[in-house]
Amino acid sequence: MISEERIKSLLQLLKDEPYDPFLNYALALEYYKLGEHSKAINLIETLLVRDENYLGAYLQLGNWYESAGNIEKARNTYTTGTKIARIQGNRKTLSELEEAIFLLDD
Image (cartoon, rainbow, N blue to C red):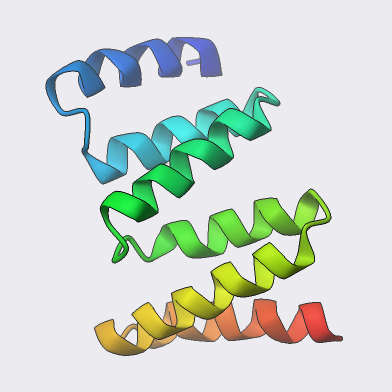
């Protein structure tokens, strides 16, 4: 299924569950694939305002900020994600976020 079709499907599902974090995350990924980076970033930022515990979004958003050259926002996003990962006891994601910070500093 191409991204435009996935976007239509996700938007349809979001009509019933507009705040579903997974659906919003998936929609952001599809928009990013289509080159609609600002729209994708806005969706993830909004998702994290609604649900700061959606851990996977921190690494993705940090990567997108990094790709856009916004290193300080990337660092802040990764750092916030590490705090959430520690609280959740998620060592795998914590390690990934710490590595991302390390690579920024490298």
